[in-house]
Amino acid sequence: MANEFIDVVRPDGKTVTVTQKAFDLVYKKEKYTLVEEKEDVDYFTQSREQLEKVKNDDLKDFLTKEEIDFDAKATKDDLISLIVGE
Image 1 (cartoon, one colour):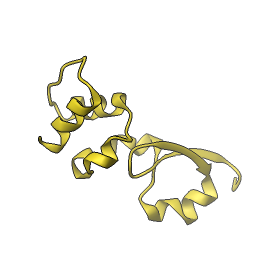
Image 2 (cartoon, helix red, strand yellow):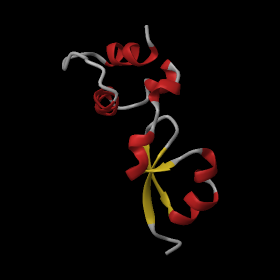
Image 3 (cartoon, one colour):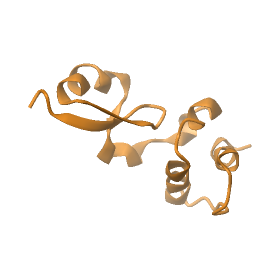
């Protein structure tokens, strides 16, 4: 079980693969979350620089979940501006 690989989400929203043991001992303390917990990421607390590393689809999913309207053709910069309130 210690060598089992799992997908986790970094604090900046990017998904990476690590071992279960590494997650339990290191990454969990660094605020990484399991992929299935990804929907709990609060992009409102992140800076523009952090949000620039997040996939457009994840930003759109977040805005949809928060019931914030956006243009389907919006650029990443537009999506980030909606989140950071600019």
